Amino acid sequence: MEKKRYHHKNLKNELIEKGIELVDQYGINQLSLRKVAQACNVSHAAPYSHFSNKEQLLREMQSHITNQFAAVLEDTVSKYKNTPDFLLEFGKAYISFFMKWPQYFSFLFQQGNIRIDLDIDGNEECNYRPFTIYKEQILKLLADADMSQSKKEDLVIALFAYVHGLTALTTMKNVHYSHKWEDKLNDLIKIFSCEF
Amino acid sequence: MEKKRYHHKNLKNELIEKGIELVDQYGINQLSLRKVAQACNVSHAAPYSHFSNKEQLLREMQSHITNQFAAVLEDTVSKYKNTPDFLLEFGKAYISFFMKWPQYFSFLFQQGNIRIDLDIDGNEECNYRPFTIYKEQILKLLADADMSQSKKEDLVIALFAYVHGLTALTTMKNVHYSHKWEDKLNDLIKIFSCEF
DNA sequence: TCCTTAATCTTTACACTGTCAAGATATTGG
DNA sequence: CCAATATCTTGACAGTGTAAAGATTAAGGA
Image (tube, rainbow over all chains, first blue to last red; front, side, top):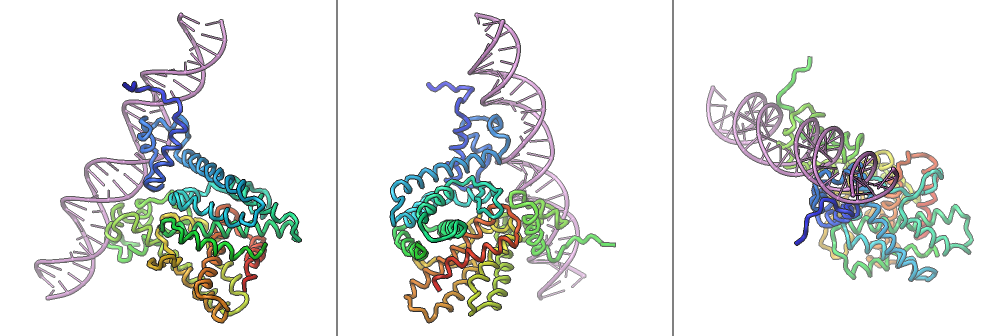
């Protein structure tokens, strides 16, 4: 028989993961601290031993998802880097992730915790690794191109904005991911490949 | 002296507008039905005479903002339609709107109430006029182009996704709108104008 | 080993939230 | 002028985030 232990030992991580599960199932609007605590079989105030408030739990959940997402993208990078298919495959991986977990997109970007350094005044920092990964690869592809550095960085932002924007559009329709979409995505991403 | 009237006469609209004001000032997370009611000098349950629940008020607020936004874009269209500057000016107007009211972007797109017909299976509908407006104009510009209809529609989606994606990126940094940005935007939008 | 301290969890409490039901007030049409 | 309806108030309730105080466990030094 399972003895109910007072101490949980790994509560912090479990709160983050159960929280993400609940967002996945019911969406961010239905999420409450107390439900997350209950899902971990723990009193409603227990989370306050690990997070200063709800906001912080949400931030750590976002960070956790972002890291998973980045890992998926790293896989894609290692498969397709320095190949002509990279642009398409990265875009497909990016969109597919949010098609698989539609609740994540608005959850990640609604609170305003994600920052991307668009290098306008240079004193911001980026905490969104998917962008960093993308930027790094594209700059490699452009290494020998006849362009100024600033023009290259503009192109990075442009391509990334395009992929991210496509994701925003596809997730706002609650269409299930279909191969039909994947085909269309091929065409869409090729539209702007003319730059290369 | 202002006599306190029991009946408000125009409460529904005022709730929508005060609600939007509060979102503008404090963000959607700080918004509550009761605060909106209080801002209208009305009891906390009064909104239920006009909205079935909070969700519906939020939807009507979103719809109100979207209509204002569409009106701004229509102005831009009437100024620049059928000119070489249209693509750039529309993009600038689109982004500028959300730079002016940064809270609106996540508010509009977080609840999942906005649908855009990407014509994947054709049985969806679009309730987001900014896209409709854009689509109409681009298709006009492409009227004589040597392209299939489906390719034209792909291009519409692509261009729109790009503008929308740029907006997403610029609003996630809480940078104040600057002319420096407007210059950069020029470059960014021109990147993909090569299609024309 | 025991004791002190810190970390982790529970319990209790409170103000705020969305929502409903019952009642009060105003408007409208006959 | 009256009845029906629309609009607003009041009161209530369960659910929420969060703080404070207390209980339990863990860890480290004597």
